[in-house]
Length: 220
Image (cartoon, rainbow, N blue to C red; front, side, top):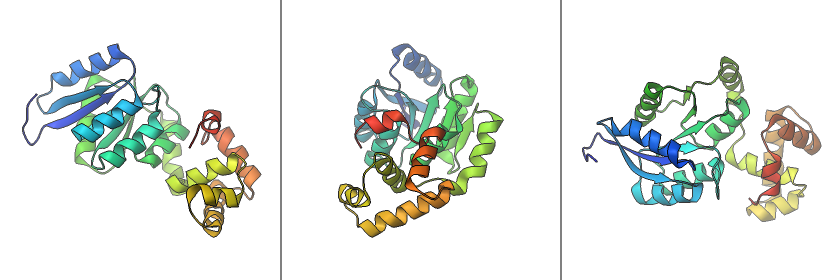
């Protein structure tokens, strides 16, 4: 492992050991990139990020113990300067939008080439713009058209609790905010989603994939 100031410290997080080994081998051939850790689940990824403070984290969407959403939030909490690249098999605009809203800096579908993957790591380390690789034109177009309508992290929290049938008062108590703040969040959510009621918002969130049934069954 080289220790020059220009070396990019990379953390790999994927529950498939063979895939991690293959990715590590790709980056092992690059003089300016050093793999500082490998995690097999989201919890381990957060722990390694806290210890290693990586420049870039390459993160799989589906991992045991903690999925990509929790891992992104945890990684950026313990290592705010890290850039997170989501690597996945899914070319789905709703998932891309959700993960980018949570703070991911790049979204790469796993059919990207070796050269594209290496270039993405260097790019996110260098620039502020989000990077999309190997996604379909439809996904890219729909993301571009929906930028203004992206829900904030807090709005997503409020929406999830509302879909779980919690009252405004219960949401306020759960999030330690006022009931008036909850109502303002809901107003913004309805406006961004193009709906007029809690029921409509719940239906649209579930049918669009903004909230999944797994979200409803998990703890927040």
